[in-house]
Length: 236
Ligand code: CA
Image (cartoon, rainbow, N blue to C red):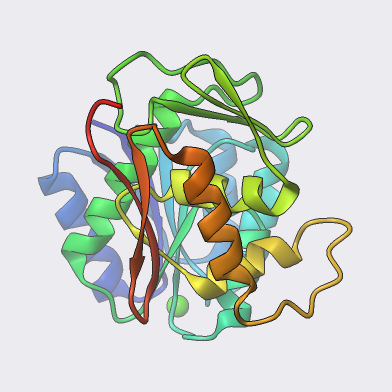
C-alpha cells in the first residue's frame, strides 16, 4: 500500500483516479491546482504522485521542477493531454519517472504506477545499493551514473554514455515499451550531446547493448512501430 497524491484539475478524472487507486489498496490525497499540490507534497510524506501537466495557478511542469529540488527520488507519473514529443521530453527532463497521454487506459495507469512504486522501493535515493536477489526481474542489473557504470550481477559492463542512458531508460521501464522518441529525447538531455542523430543510430546502439547483455537474463525486444521493451528471460 502506498500513499499517493493525485494532482488533477478535472474533478471527474481526479475523483475517478482517487476511487480507482483506493480500490487498488492505496491511500490517496488530492489537489486540484499546482499551488495546493506543492503545499501538500512538501508538508506530507507521499510514496508517489500522479501529476497532470495542465493545471491552474502553477502548471504541472513547474510543480515537478520545484518538488524535485527537495524530493529527488519521489516517483512521479505525469499526465498530459498534449500528445507532443516536446511535452513528454520536457516532462521527463524535469524529472518525471513516466508519463501517460490522455485519454489513457485506467488499468495501464495502475500498472505503470505499481511499476514506479516497486522500482522506487528497490532503489535508495542517493546511494545506489544492490537490490535483493530475486526481488525484481531487473535485480540482475545495477546502474550507477557515476562514470556511466553498470553491473550485471558482479560483472562490470562497459557502456558508452548513450548505451548507459538507453539501458537506464529500459530498466526504469521494465516490462513497458520505451518509445524511440523517449530514447532520443533522453540522449539529447545529456551534456556533450550535439543532437542530429541519424534515424538508424538507435538501432545501432540497441544492437551493441544487446551484445553486451548477451549471456544475462535480460533481453531487448523490438516492438515494431512502438519502441523497445526490456524483458527478463529467466535465470541466466
Ligand atoms: Ca488539466
